[in-house]
Image (cartoon, rainbow, N blue to C red; front, side, top):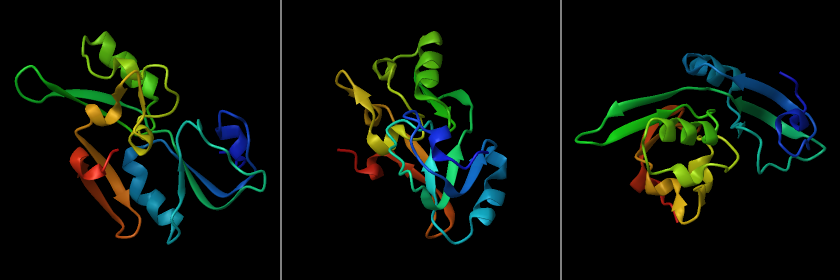
Length: 157
């Protein structure tokens, strides 16, 4: 993958990353963690809302391109939609709308990935991701463990 951040941001700005790691396969996560080593990396999704310096980034950058959406019953008429972090937010919205599901349709048109949406509590027209989020699977770089965070523990505001 090209190391210039400008090739991975929507504004086409940014110099080289010290090391740029593509991540497209969730099964390869342990290998990626090992390759990154002890440094905490920057994580880049679709590259929207990113102003990368022309001087570049002095550490590792993970380019999150994992894709996939699934739906499973959650009791009664409810379902739970699970999406990989690199899935574009618009794709998740389009998938749910085409499946006749409601709750995140107003998030359509917001750039970025579903993985970045909770970081910014993406929202529009009075609706935000926190309103529908159940949980997140995250990697804690300090403890080097995968964790599941319930939405209530994310301190959205």
